[in-house]
Amino acid sequence: MGWLMNLVLTLQVLSAIGIIVLVLLQQGKGADMGAAFGSGTSGSLFGATGSSNFLSRTTAVLATIFFIATLALSYLATQARQPAGGGSVMQNTSEVPAAPPASPAPAGTPAASQVPGAPADSGAKK
Picture (spheres, helix red, strand yellow):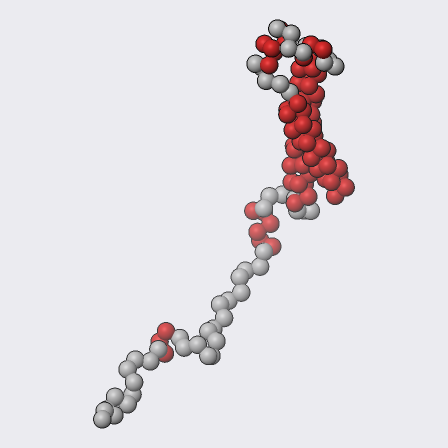
């Protein structure tokens, strides 16, 4: 189960890095106006509109992979923490031992009733 969680986690991290790179490569919607007036983007590898379609579709695929990996990690983490007997947490409370009784205060510290008041030799004034 641990190797599967590591595999899904690696897939999630790689898809997150891919999404970041692809989002940074994409141009804004205002950049298309410059392509209409011949600003040089029409001579790119994908053409004037081909790059936006390719990059946006690849980003959508990586986002889908990222969300599926996130759900898979959530499911795997829940299955790893579930008790072997099954059932809910409240059904297993009868097996939990009661808290131990409170221990008495150590001998070196005075209790609240043993706090001294006034000194015993108050008549020794000079």
